[in-house]
Image (cartoon, rainbow, N blue to C red):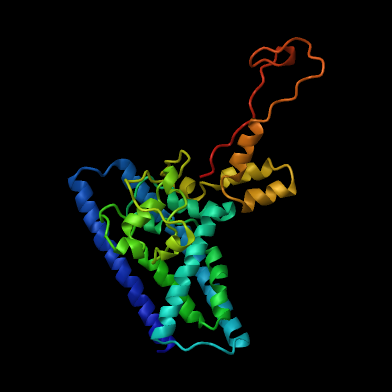
Length: 322
């Protein structure tokens, strides 16, 4: 198989899953319109999801183009053990890309700087096909870094990009409430039931089911959670905006605020690269530290009143970043 054949296969796979997504969307719309569950807010939320494609596509085209050029240069210049493109290497690349996607996805939930982009995908209170195309502008930036080792292992750049595109294309159809549980398939693949859990903000559903195509990675690494009841979708914090600009950049104001208030280089580093809840949890811990009692108070303090009769205000808690 040549690189041209692989490109044709990639296009066919992408178009096939796009068609499946359209069919699911059509079924969703008919079902929800007949049940009169389509509201003005739902429509505006769908529109907000569509608008995220504007900045995302502009950045993604540049990133994928640059990644391919970089991968090709390294492969042509330094790699003498490039694998052939055949059925077995295609299967190997798909498995490798799916495995790496699991970790890419997990890191996007566990590192705040990455979460500022991935949170856009989770910010809808609805679950429909439009959410499948709801991305932060720089959502794909980490993907090129995560998948670069495959080039060093000898996978041709065309094969790596094919794997990345296929794993993403597969996930279009799983963003729906219209397909119920699928029995044994739910134990192997990332299905609508498994992915509804991933979009849930209920405590037991948080940071679960990261898999792209296969759900076995979650089972292996202890992040699997079956769907037990319909989740509450969206971010854990109060976010229900349908303003496209607010949706695109929803996490950046909070990040900037915490960076401005950082008291040291360590705090700055942790705010950027620790778990998204690190700043909120640290602030909560500080608020529980009792205030110093003056050595010689002017008057016995009363409840909620400090020396000189001034009311003691609690430390500000910025809330949950999720």
